[in-house]
Image (cartoon, rainbow, N blue to C red; front, side, top):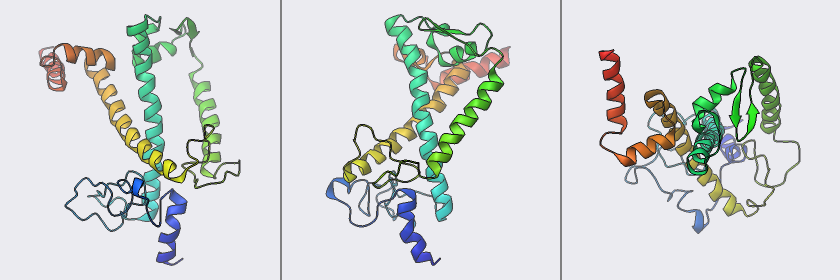
Length: 246
């Protein structure tokens, strides 16, 4: 296949936008979109066709079309998991702190998850939840169920959806929020932006948990109460000092 025809087909295969960009989307798509470095010319392979393209690819990772498609899919799928994961980290702790909910480990995400792996299980809002010795069975069943869903998604879904959908957006829209093409294009941008924040945030939750042994909301409360004593520098320095002195 000729290079020109490959590039013409790329937007349909990977959810990009080709052709004229409406005025409401000009800030996110096309040559006049927002860029990380407005005064620098973006790489030639970043044309503003895809949501979240701010014209920055210093390592040239997206110069190859196939790699670009793979990285886009990896970013969006991992970003969606991070959005769910970040909510799952925050909500139990929020319920404990603000509503007095009875959740094992005070709702701290890594403590509650650890308890669920014990034979006794974890008490979550009055319901017992435990895996006991069934972790291998859970792992296998999760792989089978999610694997089937992923195969369905990757093959374009099974419902014969109409519209500008692809393997990343297989057409599940029960509320009809994506019926307007411009609204759909803008929601794609919002999803990518929030997904990137969620991935960075989840990494922050993980590092916080390893360093302080506390949940994200408790760490936030400590920081707001005494920003000078409770921040990334002092917490990491305190851990290193304890290891040296210990």
